[in-house]
Length: 301
Image 1 (spheres, one colour):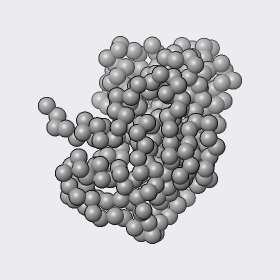
Image 2 (cartoon, one colour):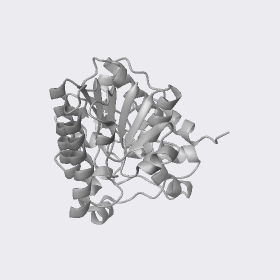
Image 3 (spheres, rainbow, N blue to C red):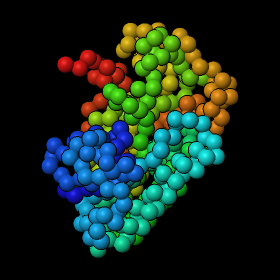
Image 4 (cartoon, rainbow, N blue to C red):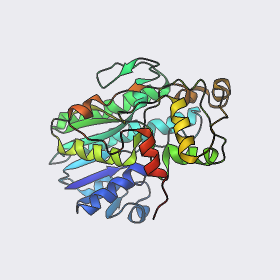
């Protein structure tokens, strides 16, 4: 298989490259720093410009994961512009280039996030649900998906991967939480009642592979575990896995004061079900949080 990845040097992208390198696939990574691709992305070739691939790259699949981290800092005007450019504008450029190819790829799996739904409160949500909120993150995801959808005009199947926070041994959400929790300084966020979808990195990679291989997979696809939890349960489960207390909650008012609108990422949530993945027969390796954390935190041999 001939695959192009954007965002290949990120957490999910690197895991995909390792997975596909073992299968012997030919991988290109479109990157602002192509010189780093060889060391970060197993078996991949870095390109700085899509034109380096030629007018008929004959790609079988494209996986579009590019995007500046959304939770690294508050959403100032400059930060919003960067988040928009690195997702919406980049996807527009990618889809425009795909439309110019002599042979269109069979499938585009394009990144999105569970933030597409906004803060859903107690409302059960799946791929058939309408957005529950219109904060900046929700608007960003909606525009991101619209740009990806245009690839259908070229005959490419489009999967919109709405990814929950990814749990991994290093990087992502877990890497941010481990230092305070290991010191016994962790705790719930706000009331702790907000729903908190999540997915193990191994399942994220496996679900992308599943989406590529199943022609009936099209449109939105929630990349989250079926074992939904509230924030309080998540923090207590993580604390137990580390044999530490979780007694220091972060007040909602303090988070809103410090983060502004971005606090919706921590204080809002989605009671989300991966209905489409279940219909497609996907089998999770880590469907429950306690087991996922145990596997991630066990000492490496």
